[in-house]
Image (cartoon, rainbow over all chains, first blue to last red):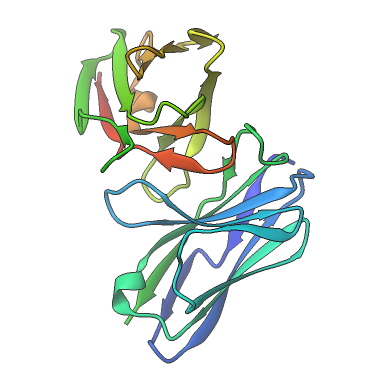
Length: 113
Length: 111
């Protein structure tokens, strides 16, 4: 299994809603990542988890809250988002983080109304 | 200030010819580089990597060249195929974990 899966594929939410994005991998990878990608822009790193601990938070607003319940799962909890948060949210994983290739999921297309 | 630059937003190449995608970086601490390919509505797919101890890495039709003194790398695809049409991202890292992506180059391979 060399796949990173993400659910849902598409999500539309209002600014007062609370929702969560989910990411899963069963490759035994111990580093997992959340990226945000706006149209026609490269992916921007949001968070890195290494061995289930948050190791990098790239100054992301607190309305985005990551969670790593175990080594296979990564969640991104969303609350009180703004329309400008609409984007493709990509999850990735790598073996241990140090110079290892990152494998990306298909992304969740988020629209905030 | 962009640390990773891909100065050609788009490139068109005839099928069967060579595609050359360029990437420049400014941070001399970067020592690990990757190329990703991205189709619309999909996540980026890893293509090929190179570390600073090498100046060339080859995998099938894909070859990456690294010129550390010039802070420049390039991806060669030969022969180019219509299925190669996608956006190609160059990414660089100094710690192997935090990658900075370039803006991407859209490659169109014409049949």
